[in-house]
Length: 127
Image 1 (cartoon, rainbow, N blue to C red):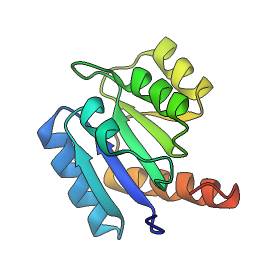
Image 2: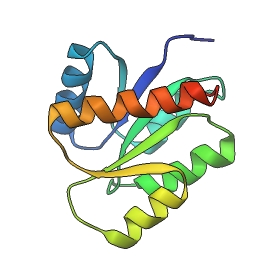
Image 3: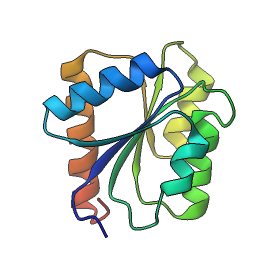
Image 4: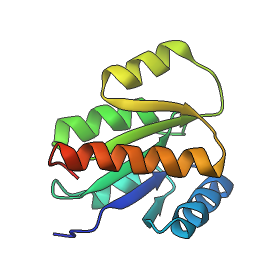
């Protein structure tokens, strides 16, 4: 089992994946990137630690479907759902599934969000 938390970035937009990966690595995070929910689920393990930053709107399985599948599989990862489009019903659904819903943000806010999620999961003994 990998003891270091990893930030899993799941987004079908390569520019977003690359930017988030670079940003998070600059802030000291271990990062793994995936171009689809399905690609992420192929490697996800129940003992994975960290958080997943997932795009709400992707081809194939979307971010909310991924969040639900992660819960069904017992993946103990915090989830941050990103969207470039304001969608209140989807945000409510994400939050009710224990995710943080966020519009695309600045690097400082993104890094602080990941740190906060990991800190809260560490307190709960999950991450």
